Length: 446
Picture: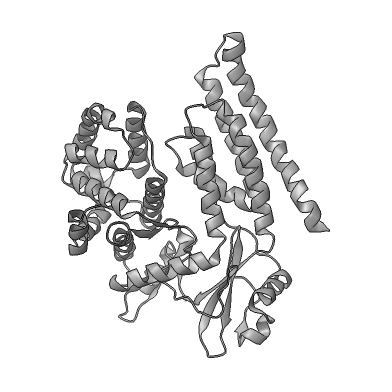
């Protein structure tokens, strides 16, 4: 009975937040259209800020897909108001775990027998919990330590309700920003969230990246344990480590922070430029550290619900843009960016002087200037450049790349705010770009 009432109650709560938000925007829009008195920019910015804060509070309260929606919206700085991106950037996908009784019932249904019969041991206390599921530690009957990620039974119902409201809201809100393709954002959000609910797909991504990372020293990916993985449960080998940002533990183990940063960045440089397959959610909860067999820090990458496999042609152009940027080649950088779909061909010549100015600012910095460079200030500078160029569109593939890069920069800042992540990353990026397979990919037809 509770489940029958849950969806309409959730719908009413969401509508109770979205409806006043809509009429606030309708009044500002109508002032100019109907009364000839356009609302000042400050009024629009205030409305954006208030609306984003209300959505933030709603997402934290309702959990489910709304937190994920807010996280995705916060990455689309190219098409959503700055105030929305700023307010939603702080959404964290951490929730209280569901009671063991519910999880036990879910596991029994998925595995065909009670978990006490399937496993030699299983911990009833979750080791982690998020919007879509939670993780429990267990031991198989043949002695393997494993992690079980179990999807909540009602998550599809909650997500269906959330997506229904969003689908209804998109055409209503799009009249205020006719140049912004809100339907495209909705389609991206829906596809990303529905994909994340399929644990078989996540298991496939885990296998792919795990195989790719075998060539990267001091980096590991948990192996999928067959026989216990279903559409709603994924079982992997257990990695007994701690969060990468636990500086006290790193110091106690004698692991230099710079060494940990370099190993993390090398792994992602290989994903971006060599493999073209990357996990786009590298927050501290998904990056663990432990002592490896050689006594140094070993990095573990977790959670492959959000993975992007770049089309080969797109990856080639991304590599070309990166090589041109490192080589200060404005002409080829502009061509590569146009090839990525960010600029139209007619905008290239207009963009070159702006890009040239940006390159000069970046590459004329002294080593000390670079060390002190604020990544957030750099992001704002890039946004200002995009604002000067008409017709800019950031493809979703590039958005996910930028999101991963931004999260990695945040991890670096958390580890040591006095060290600039860009300076640390450059040698690893160049190392990846100079790999023979990357050079061959550049030479091959797209």
